[in-house]
Structure formats: C-alpha cells, structure tokens
Image (tube, helix red, strand yellow):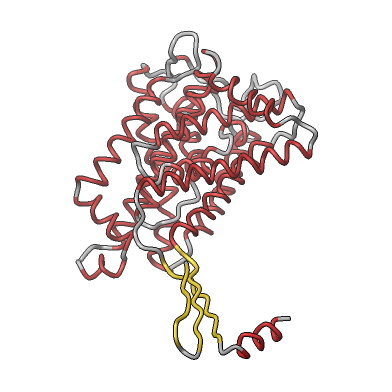
Length: 381
C-alpha cells in the first residue's frame, strides 16, 4: 500500500515531506490552555472507564467534588493532603528547572519520616516541644537532602541517569521503613501491627483545633513556595539553575558549575520532601507506619503538581490544593463504589500521560510540505 501511494505521488511529479520541528516560544496563556485541555481530556477518558464499569461518571465526579470541597471537614482533609504535595512539588520545581529529573521525592519523604521517628522515640523524647519539633524539621530536611545527594553524585561522577537512581532509591527507602517497623523499632503496644509506639506529646506537631491540619508544616510549605519563587527569580544561584536547565553548554561557557547546580537543586528538592515526611509522622500519624500509610504516593503525585503549575512555585499552591482534593475524592469513591484501592492512580496516570502529550504538541509541530517538480506547492503545520 505504501509503495502504491509513493508511486502515485511520483506519477504526478509530487514529493511529500513530513518533518517534526521545535515550535517557537509560546505564551503563558497557550501553556495554561494546553494544561487545562490535558486535564479535561484525562477526565473524559476516566469518565469512559467509569461508564465501562457501569458507574455514572457524573455521580462519580459529584462525589469527588463534594467530598473534597463541599464541607468544612472535606476542605480541611484536602488541606492535609495538600501539605506534602506542596512541599514535594516545590522541591521538584527546583530540580526540574535545573533539568535534573528527581523522581525520588517519595523515598526522600520516607527518610524525613525515619529521622523524625528517631528523634521522637529515642533522641529527644523528653525534650520540650520548642526544641524537639524544630530539630525534627531541620534534620528531616538534611536527611531528605542527603538521600537525594546520592543520585546527584552518581550523575556528576559517573553520568548515571538520575531517573533510574532516584526511582530505585524510593524502593530502598521503603524497605528501610519496613525493616524498622517489623524489627528494631516495632512498638510494644503496636498490637502486632508493623508500626512503632506512639510519639510523646511533646514531639507531636500541634494541629488547628477540630482539624488534622498540622499548621506548622502548612506554614513551612507555603513559605517554601514563596522562598523558591524568590530564589529562582532574584538570586544568583536561581539564575544559574535556570540557565543550566535551559542550555547546559551556555552555562558551562559562562563559568557556571554544573556540579554545584545539580547538588544544590537536589539538596533543596530532597530536603523539602524530607520536611513533608516529618509533617506526616509528627503531625498526622504520630508514629512510623507502613510506607503506603505514611505516603499515599505523594512523591509521585507531586510530579503532576509541578508540571500542572508549569514549574511556577506560586501557582503550585492552588494546584496542590486541587490535587489534594482529587486524592480525597479518590478515597471517597473507593468506598462509595467499592472500587480497587489504587483507583486514584488511574486518575494520576491519565493526567500525567495527557500532560506529557500536551507538552509534546506544545513544543513540537509536524510540518507537511508538498512539492511538484522541486517547487513548493503547499506547506502546513
């Protein structure tokens, strides 16, 4: 068939060329429209899946919206889910701006949770809260940052792909948590469950009354988004990160150290994820539990948060709130419609897939040229 088609073109003296070209710079409005359409398409596909499962998609989306945003309890629970998404997402923006693909926020979060547990149960369990809680946040940042530093060094020294190393280190962190809760840190009052003893009161992050919002972590999360916005737009290191992320060759020619950019961006990215882990165990669970109980895939969902915000650390605040609502709604429809536990990952995967497709269409275009006897007859893209 292809041979016949080519022969027909040659018979009329025609020549068809299809090229893929990089598009020129697009406006922010166009980028926002592409992101919006990507999410809309993912929701349409999800609606088709609901219909196949004999579930009315309108009722399903209504349940998702009302459970997340239709009541005071729903909004507070959405904010609780928003906190780790905002912290991990803000950190990922720094890494992605430097063109460093940190897929390991999940593991970095778990390292922060481990350090917080060690402080609460073994190190500062009798210290006053104004010492123990700031120490948790500080050491949680360091733990997450150091965990992210390992892939950074492997990339710098041996040019190892950071996507693979950060992804694999998520599983290593998860197994470390399992070892601790099944082994040396298993609580005496855990009733046989794989979890530690409950944290002393002085090591628990206080919550807003009648909610589960651990406000200290929320304040740190929002402040981090603002600080990163200033860091990337108004500081020397932020300029270096942006230049290196766009054109590494130009950055090296200008004397910008690639090693410093990679290390700093990964330290910040991993450190903020570590703070998210501190907030989860010290502000919400008050003990170290099974990895999936500590993090509902926040490190992976934060990738979607970062890209939906177009790597804008201010826009990430409302985006993380909306994605937090999606997680809350996912929990609700699991119960209402008796869907599998991981049903929310379908939404996340569809959104990420549609976003990636939208990025390709935004950055590249197909150019079709038709020539007749060497003369351009038609051109479209």
